[in-house]
Length: 414
Ligand code: GLV
Ligand code: MN
Ligand code: MN
Image (cartoon, rainbow, N blue to C red; front, side, top):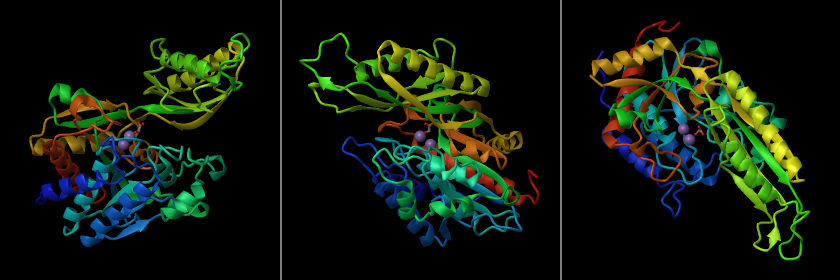
């Protein structure tokens, strides 16, 4: 079967137009899930898809489908990623996978395939505003925590309202759950976000394992007071305690507890130059590819935080805000990707993902794999995240070739 070429100009145009949506003064993209900018990006994709005759739909969890939703009587190959970003992000994380997925759906549409191929933009993968990362893929894979456990956004927006604006419905969110019997596989194309492919000069990564992660929300409660008149002995400075907590968390990997650990978000109140900080809210993100290790490190982080709190006479509350399990990708799919790459003489490297992905959630319900392309300088979650356009096109072509190979064979992977 002939392999249609990826439309390079269309792929790159869409990526550069999407990079303008949520653009901040720093040159970065701020498009957190369910924000107005996220809605604009979703509408952009709907227009692009519909202009090409691709049907679109939004499910109850706010996932945007570009192509047919999986349905009874057939098993669908799903290609996807996310359109939402972190604060001050680069232009490619997530978006690239969605744009390439739509490109594949458009190019494969005229072919008579044994299995339908569709694209999805999962809602709120990053959790940058609404602190439930992987929201959409958790819903699609039937792993969403009960709505009561879903907190409001960092800006106070209710998830119920945010979801309604996106075209979803919190009360019906279970309807977003996919039936595994209607799925053939899930494939996600993404930038690597790390240095390995660039260092090795290899254009394609085939992901073998995806790191697991636990996120804690920590409140440090001290006593606010006058910065000039409150004697140093007896202070309960929440920010000074938080500073120790940040360093204790940073020390976890060196002490063998996990691979990486980060305090990425910190809010001090009242945040006034001449007032002792009374309250700090911070997040702890710990990651490892070994699940047993991951449980241990979360407990150790809490132990360290409580010890610091006791010594500094502040109170703390630690809540497990999100957790994802490390996963291995599907061996058969990895072989299909490698074979498709071979047919085009694309060099590949097998690697591990230190970033979390919707693929991790989808692995619970269907065979799943990921393709990576190099990140210039190995950086991501920063405005200067970038990938060579030639590599972007190569990755999109490989996604499409792999999709074609898998979807052409009746009963493949079953
Ligand atoms: C997702 O971007 C992550 O934080 O790994
Ligand atoms: Mn990301
Ligand atoms: Mn991503």
